[in-house]
Length: 67
Image (cartoon, rainbow, N blue to C red; front, side):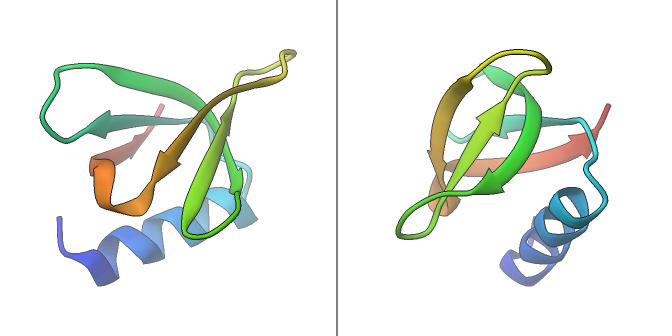
């Protein structure tokens, strides 16, 4: 996924509060939750009804889709 498209989708997911699934580079693991801005080019992924479940750096994201 091109970087500009990835940033656009991330901005849309945060502004519209979409539940998303994020696939990480180099692994088959995915994370599901709501996105929020983190410190220094990172994202916070929050599961519904829970605290922060993970930090992701922009360079780790392979793709993102709405659930």
